[in-house]
Length: 338
Image 1 (cartoon, rainbow, N blue to C red):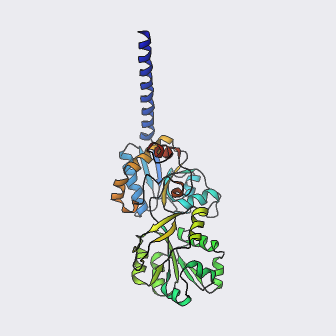
Image 2 (cartoon, one colour; image 1 turned 30 degrees about the horizontal axis):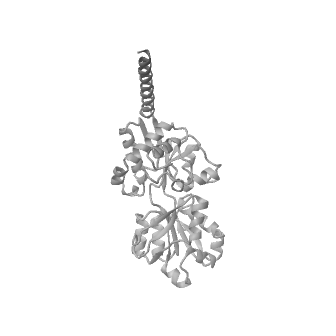
Image 3 (cartoon, helix red, strand yellow; image 1 turned 180 degrees about the vertical axis):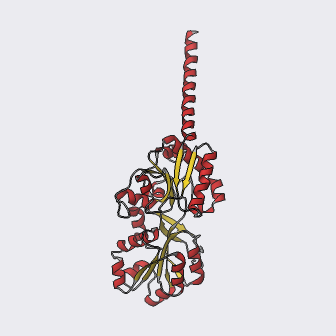
C-alpha cells in the first residue's frame, strides 16, 4: 500500500511539475513585448508585419509593436547591434555581411539570429538592351565587362541592395565604377521610374534591380523597351551563393514579355531575424504560429508563396546565419530539421 501511495505521489508530482512548466512557458509568450522593426507605412513589408503582429497576438503572444524604423537591407542588422529592435525583416546576405565584415562603413554587427527564411523570391533581375547586344555582339554582362565596353549601368542609389549587388558583381569581375567610366561607360543611380524612362530613351544599356517578378518597374520596362533578361554565368552565381550568402532563385519562363526561357538568378530573399536575447519559448511560439498558418498568410499575401516551413530554416535560406534556439526547436519538433 505504501509503495502504491509512493508511486501515485510521484506521478502527481511529475504532472504538477509539467503543468507548472507549461504555465511558465505560456506566461513567457503571454507576457512578451516585442518590437518589430519594419519599413515605412504603406510598404509591403509594413503590411506583412502588421498582419503577422495580429496573427501572433491572436494566438497568445502578448504584444507585438510594429514600428516603421528599419533603415532597410544594409542597415537593418544594426537595429539588433544597438538594441533598438527585437525582430526585423532583413535579406539573408546583408545579415551575413554585417556579421562577418560590417556594412555601411560600420563595425561588424552582432546580437541577432535567424528565425525564418525565404519569405519572398527576390533576386538580381538584370537585362541588356537589344540595341547594345546587336551593336557589340555580346549576350552577357560578363562578356561586356571583360571586353571593357562602354556600358551604361543603371541601379538604385548608393546604400540600396541593388547598388550593393552591382558593386559585388563588378568587384567579382575585377573592375570598379571608375574602370567602367574610363571605358566611356557609366553607373547611373536613380529611382525605378527614372531608370525605366532612361532605358526607354536609350540612355541605359544594362539595369539591375534586386526584386521579384511582380516588380512594376520591370513589368513596365518589358512592355515599353526592347530588352533581354539575363542569367549570369554559373561561376558568377556560384560566387554569390558560396561566398556572399545568396541563394539560387528560379524565375519561370514568360514572367516578362519576351522572356521565353526559365532564368536562375542569385538572390537574397527576405527573412525574419530576431534578437538573440529573446527567450527560446517566445521565439518557438512565434515560429510555430507563423509556420502553422502558412496557407492563411499566402492567401492574404501572394508574395509569401515562396515561404515553406519544410525548408525555410536551411542555411542557404537565411544567409548562413545560425537559427535562434527557439526556431531550431520548432523545426526539429516538426520533423523538418534533424
